[in-house]
Image (cartoon, rainbow, N blue to C red; front, side, top):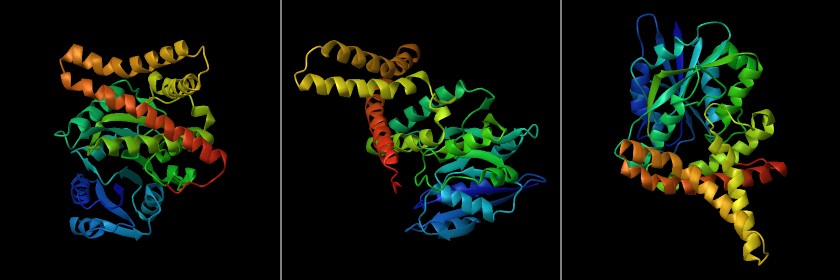
Length: 327
């Protein structure tokens, strides 16, 4: 069986070589692996490093990871297309575990999980901890995958058209394809034993900008799939409450500043509820597992909620005006 690993890359010279080498090392017995790196207009040595590591490199002008993935799978020769990112390092057995998830013809995609590639970073460790808490609660069949770790048969990509290139950043394009796969009648299996090791953001501003983009592109996602506004298996209740609480806090604060009376108590209630949902789980790690360094992460999640909601509001306004964002 031939499998194609497709990796979109933009200015990824620091990690792309390792990603390619560990992808090629997945070859076992009758499993043949080709690695295709789509260099999305990089200005560094990404393409040269990927070629030296053994990948087939396709160069294109910068068009975003969704367009790069499409270019990759359309040029690939494998029956199964496995997608990961340029800052992800596949773990031994990654491809075999993904492919084992195709138990019948109704499975249209198989998604895997994360490990952490940069555990020395305090922020990266807690980002990983939160992801693992979410993954522990995910069922065997899910409604959305991440394109950092997923296998999709060629005929499924052909039937759905692949990734939507309108998503110019790495946010929302994988959920969009997930929903279209499900609407075509296929299921998405979750195999947590199929793992890649990921470099999470190490700087707070990088993480918050990433969360802003998630909020922004989620507006496009909800416009395309309004039936998915209620969330998926990765989304928790606090994620769904977050924008409501943030908008309430901001609205009641503005009214109070303007001197309009009667909104102090609603403001305090919304602020208390928002604080509780963002303090509860880091506090549980501190009290239950003695991890005192979870406490500063409370502040990160507090800021993240406002940043993500701001991105969602900007996205809703942008798409309501039917402007094509080039972010």
